[in-house]
Structure formats: C-alpha cells, structure tokens
Image (tube, rainbow, N blue to C red; front, side):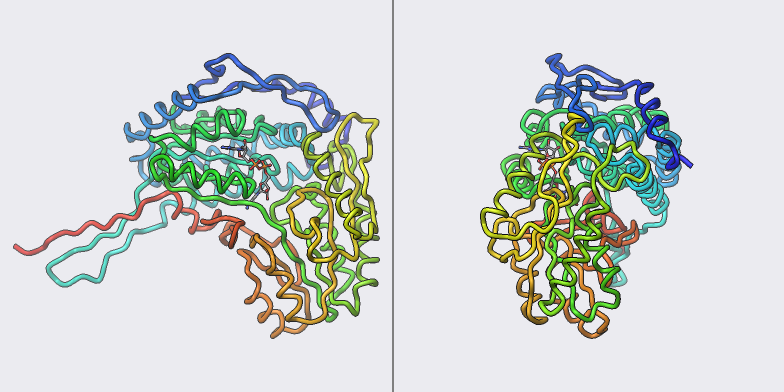
Length: 500
Ligand code: NAD
C-alpha cells in the first residue's frame, strides 16, 4: 500500500517529519558534551535538513560507562533468551509500525528511492530483527565427549560492550545486521552511524526503549569517523568492535583493536565483484537486465555491486548492447517519485569521486557506451547517469578500484580459465556471479571464485538464513544467519570433576 504513495504525498509526509537529531545515551536523548553539531544535508536537493549532535571522545566515554553499567546489572545480559526474544520482536514491530517514517529518513538522508527504502531497507531490517530474535531461544550449548568422571560444558557468553560502526548506503539495514545479533546474545551496544546518514539510527533508539530494552543497552552516537568512531575503536572497555565500511577504514580499525585491548574486531568491507557471463547463459536478455540492475540499484552504492562485467568474447558486443539498452531505463529520478529506479548519490564529495573515476576511465582508453555525466543539476541535488564503459582493460583504474557509484566496467574473456583468472585478480572477495547453462561449468567456476557469496544465473540472492561476508580484503567474520552469533559471543569450556 505505502509504495503507491504519490510524490506529493511523500513530500507532505517529509514536511511533517519531526527530526530527532541528538545522541541517545543511557536511555535519553542528549546533546554532544561539547554542544557541537554538524549539518545534515539532503542529497536530494543539496539543502540542509537540520543540525545533528557531533559526538566525540567525551560522549563515547559516557556511552561506554552507561553500556558497561547496563551490562553488569544483568537486566538485559542475564535476562532469559525468551525475554530477549519477545523484546526484540516488539522492537521489530515498532520499526514496522514506523516503516514509512524510517524509509523517508533514509531517502532524505542518503538519497535512495523512498520506495526501495520501504520495500528493502526497512522490511529487511524488520526481518533481520525477527529472524534473529526467533533464533535466540533455540540455540543450545554443547557437552563435550568426556571420560565418565568429567563433564565438559561448552557455552557461549556475550562479549559485553559492543561498538558498531556502520556506513551510509543501507543505514538502517547495515546497523540491524550488527545490533540484532549483538542484542539477542545479551550485549550492550553503542551504534555509531555514518555522519552522512545518522537520522534512522537516532530515531530507532527510542523505539528500542519503547520495546523494553533497558537504558544503557542500546546507545547511538552520531558523529564523524575520527571524532566518534576512533575513540570507540580505541576504548579499553569496549569488548567487541563490528564494522561495515571501506577496506581502508576497516584495516585501520583492526590496528585500533591491536593498539588497545585486543577487542574482538570484525570488518565487513568493500568489493569489486565480478559478474561472469558465458555465451551459454540460459537467457541472455535476463542476464543483461540483471547485470544492469546489479550495478545501478541503489545508485551503485552497494558493497556487492556487480561492478565488473566479464563477458565471453564471442557474445560481448551483442551483450553490451543489451546491457546499455536496459541501463537506459534506470535513469535517476526524484527519490519520492513512485518507481524511481535510482535516486541521488549520497553527497557532493561522493558524486565528484564518481565523476573523477569516469574521467579516469575515459583518459585510460575505455569506451564510454552509456551515461558518463551528472544529471538533474537543476534540482541542486547530486545525481549521476547510469554509466557503462566497454573495452575496459583489466589493468585500468576503473576495473581495479571500488567506485561505489553507477559505473560498470565491461571486460571480455576468452575461456573459463581466463574468466576465473580475471575474476579473482582483485584485492576484494565479497561476491561474484556466474551465468551458464552448463551445470558442471557452473559448479566448477563457483568453486574457484574467491568470494563470500556466489550467485549462479542471478545476482544478489540472499536471506537471513545464510551468512554474508567477504574473502580477502572484503573483510572477516560474517553477518546474518546463526554464524553471526559467533562474533558477539565468547566460547567457554567449563569442566566439572564428577569423582566422589
Ligand atoms: P567508510 O569506511 O568511509 O565509513 C564507514 C563508517 O566508518 C562511518 O560510520 C564512518 O564515520 C566511520 N569511520 C570513518 N573513518 C573512521 C576512523 N578513522 N575511525 C573510526 N571510524 C571511522 O565507508 P562508507 O563510505 O560509509 O561506506 C562505503 C563502504 O562501505 C564501501 O567500501 C562499501 O563497499 C562498504 N560496505 C561494505 C558492506 C559489506 O557488508 N561488506 C556493506 C555496505 C557497505
């Protein structure tokens, strides 16, 4: 029903929004200790929507103290799994109840189509919370196969205080992938949203309280990476650090963990994912449309964006023409426009970064087959046309570096071996796709691709039931599924002597 709202109706809702802009510490909205704030500029039109609390070390200190106190009190950490399940289910219900408002916040903050925010970001966040909550009272410990006179109990315990630093491309969903399993396993959480998209995280803090999560167990610190993220990563009383963001920052945070208290540190980072299309793909038209959506969905600001399209040389020209045709229908529109296929790029800096990569592609000799420019400039917002580069050499910058924008690089390959070599010749290993009708080839190639997720004859499959994360410099640890619990718990072996 909500997806059918008109642009005017979304605009009216946006005008009526009462934005929360403070930090949330120990169960209350508060200003940053310094009183500092930063501008919240919407990429839809380049206009400010207000000023947000800019947290720094002193606020991190306050939040860690509150989180530790809450953890030690046992009100949440020692409550029964059934209680935590019910509370998180209430939290999920409240998010669902406020779905339109949260979708609007995402769209205003980072520019994605509000219809996508509603149908994907908010609904997947609700599913993530519900699935995780539902699982928590069904996960058992183990008993070791010990000799008769001993009992070996293997149990999982919460880490304690967990810092979660998340990006702006799916602000609520990336946060939910962290806080749902962290809270479900009994931890206290300090969430640091991206400075580019803090609004939904701030808003859900009070929903968490309303659901019954005790004060201090869920805290939100808006602020910048250096000012708020780094003190959290270096804090001696934070037990776990989970991160989604760029590989550069992820590597830095691993060092912060090592330089401080060796807190458990799990990083979900960037990608440059290969989408490998063989001439015997079952349906070339479907493969071309999936290739276009795989790179242009969410303005290309997706860690698993299908940014490298590897096509068997014999069908390359025909296939690129089909991808270009599909791409023409995915031009950005105002994010409140029903059915907008793309919205705005998150901010001016990111837009310029994308445009710089486009210039590099041209300068290094790739052939621009579609797009390549900023559009909708009259709106004051930051929009880039869907862009396709053909005849990309594997060594070019646009083939190597993560652009995080709507820019596709097409590379031709000669045979299976060549395809696997090019696909794996990257620092990243987040996702990959294979298109072929040959079952053995599909299995052979899927096995050889060094990536955390491999899709055969489609792109971007996924569910809470399966783990998500990367090989190589795309990260460590996994979000989603029961495997996510591993990041938020310590494994304990308790030995009991049964000899009388
Ligand atoms: P980013 O690394 O710039 O920022 C991510 C978060 O880290 C933000 O909250 C930021 O404030 C914080 N941060 C930045 N510098 C910091 C520092 N020195 N200390 C502590 N915190 C710091 O990434 P981004 O631009 O927000 O997001 C885009 C990146 O995220 C892309 O590389 C994308 O591939 C990646 N991503 C990965 C996944 C995944 O699951 N693997 C999912 C989504 C996005």
